[in-house]
Image (cartoon, rainbow, N blue to C red):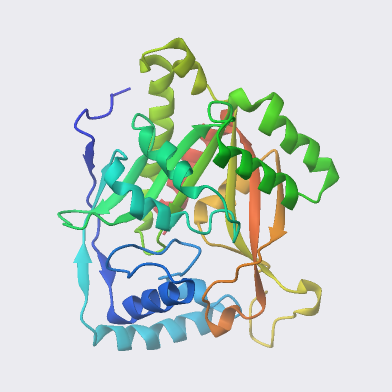
Length: 328
């Protein structure tokens, strides 16, 4: 297995991403709603806004989606586009602002020590990746993926607050015991898999992004300077905290004539559906914060999703993710 480049910079170029003025306007709206910094200084996270028109039309039939997409594409063709190539980097301190913006709603609207959480992510340079636009002077962060050992940071305030939050939102008694085991007794073997990004990240980046993460975890079990550190990356389970949209009152929602069945769950990140399929347990909880959405999403509720995935399922996940992206 080839080792990672030592320079901290991994170049991966795919079909350029297109930013239209319309999408930049949506970004402005989302930032204004939450009083976050100007979008030229940061990027909103995937849960805040979808740049994929298909994600905005869950209640329409496939034909209806295609008709609306065709209409919107005609409008977009008349707008100026900005193209960008992406590169993978090891985290570094100057990424603090961009990473913090991506994680702003990681624990819903909870007030917690997010700054320390971001610091731990950036200090762990051997495992973790940030994605940026090539030759961008501002070095805006468009994506983040990493895995943090739950026991290694257990005494830190941000991790205590994170565990408190998860216990509070888990209302399913049969799962609460499983959650408690991962948070405490088995914490040494648990990796908190943190993955946040803007929705307009090209899907072709996902397989190498996750392949890089899990390869780095494997390398760290051999290459870290101390046995304690090597042991901290020998994960047996991964814990994921993410977001989805669930249809409100699904039993009362019936598709209209000519429409396909209405989707009960909208996954903001396609890989989350794969993780859920492979998970040993999961639970959802209603989110108090609601994000900027389109009219088509009015019948959906933003929900938190917590999942536990055994590490021995990761090879299967990587295969499934590659197949999923190849089909697109």
